Image 1 (tube, rainbow, N blue to C red):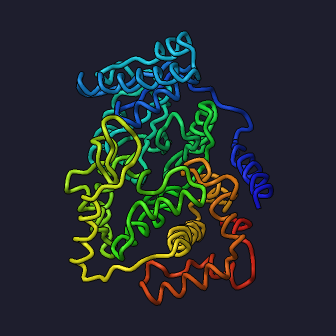
Image 2 (spheres, rainbow, N blue to C red):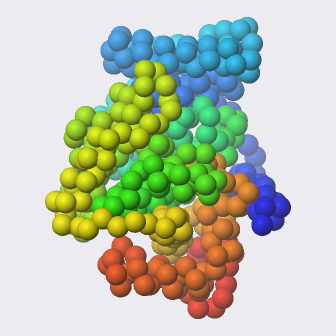
Length: 434
């Protein structure tokens, strides 16, 4: 399958790279940029602009936070120099393009501003209200939110046509994907300009509609959730991660969550529990965070990390937390064959990808594969999530999911597109949303 998969991956990325322009001409390029927030994501996004030769301001509310953010950037360039992938002169030139500021007036004339603050609605709305008062007419007002509806964020401004999502993936200066997200009121010009900006930053970009989680994270959400649910039945993080790395992922879902930070998922779960009455809680994940384990940022998450090492080490404390929740739920732990783990995680996301197609959040099934290849490290030799699913067969996946729906409930209810494709013996990668 590898050669066909590699050809397919290259072809669908070329398709995604084509920007549909209403005017037939490229807009003026972004010449100056600003990033709100100097955390891990904000620092990484600033590096993206500097690497592309675009001057960028990094705004933080406090001097200490700004100092930490600029320190992250300095450390990243120093690492690259030590590895020999960047000369000292190039590192100095790029870092000189990054300027830390604490006042919104300093960024007022930038062509684009990307908000990268904590994933809470009220915090983001406050930032966009300030941007609305400060930024020059016509500036792109973009959010790096990974989940929050663009319309909710845009409602804090008087110019929702200028607001869109530019969702980078962690680490932002390494991962190739930028998800360009349109809200109900986002203008076509804004989407085009954001797409060309992503291209100029060297990103693979995909345009998607707005919903909770957008297309990339929404399609991956069941993959992560199912991994955590397996813990409630007796599995352990290191077994699940080993299975997924054996499949070809560079990291398993638990190690990847530690890298991103577990507090982000915790806040998102709390928000969704308030918004959706049928939200399925994940008590093991909540207990991990509530015990003070945040991931690599504090040296302990699903794994423990010694000193400044990024090597995940299994932790008996995590095993105890998992066992405690399993007992509280009244479950009897069981062992899992690797194939069941693989199918539970990937089939869950195949089904959700089909729901996303049902709703028209993406227009082409192949865009889902582009996002998984470039945002989540899906093994290129397997083509993409839906390309791989086609090799398994939509009929096989539908039958397995239907059986799990009988056993586990409605989270496994088959999507309409999956059921229809299975019934006619079709291919998921050929689906285009209407």
